[in-house]
Image (tube, rainbow, N blue to C red; front, side, top):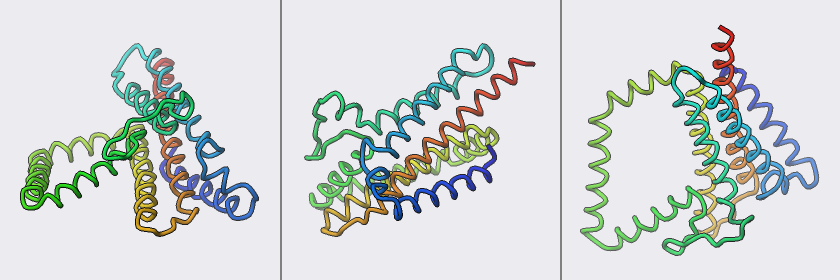
Length: 227
């Protein structure tokens, strides 16, 4: 799928979801709550991407198997994230760090925030430690900037990798909205339900991007098989 068509599809998808959200009774619950329509659709799409990647992997008798492995790993990881690693189904209790229940990756941002806050409250040496970490990160980016830029340019030549990048972009946006919602609630502000809708839509978009990328890999395999 061309990126322009993907963009048009997303516009239509978001428009339909927004209209349904504001006009159909019960739609806000189906589109924003856990274990309901939109989240279940996201999980199903991740599983579909994983199935396509697995099929491509086992049937790919030539060429690199790196990309199918990446798609399979990402789809399994994202599925586990959406299901909180089975906590709600298996019934186990996730462990806590800094009083925060760690049942998904974005909880690490909450934990990191608490760590940074404690370091700042620790005074001079805590702040100095944070500055040293920031300088080290900047130094590493500076040293490896050419390699990173070259890797990015090379990656953009493969359409499937572009959709992997879109997966990270929209998945990251979903995490950002979740963090914003938690921060506002901690500060005593209400987070409107349409914000939760955007979070769920971004997560579903990430799953759609992964499915499209997996289909591109499968089509390449079938084309090479025919040759």
